[in-house]
Image (cartoon, rainbow, N blue to C red):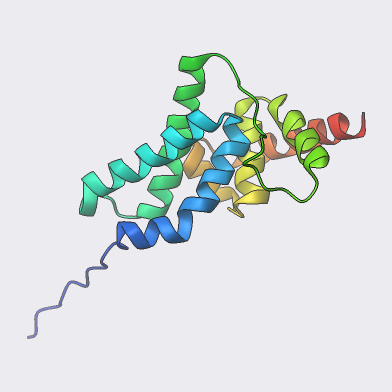
Length: 157
């Protein structure tokens, strides 16, 4: 009888993962945290930890996203303040519209803001968002529903 071979999937190269996910992750964390310094630190640290842990991480893409959002949340809590989000380095098609949207996002509770950014900007599904935020699928749906409703109120008002 032949022995079954174990198929091991090699995790993506950290450089390749960063090239593929880094810019999109940075923009998503920025929309969530609304703080460039927190965003820079969270994304850089998430990738640094991913490199250090190497093969211990089964799904590096999800791990990096989860870690970056958790680090950003911790950074915001530690800082307890916000700094202006848009400046002359930010490229957007309509700066006034972007500032209005980001200001409205900033008024949402963190979990609602994170769920909306992960869903509508990063394109994650409910199951993935639940894993990233460490909550149930039902809670994610509530965050998205309430966040959309409140965002609509803020943007129309």
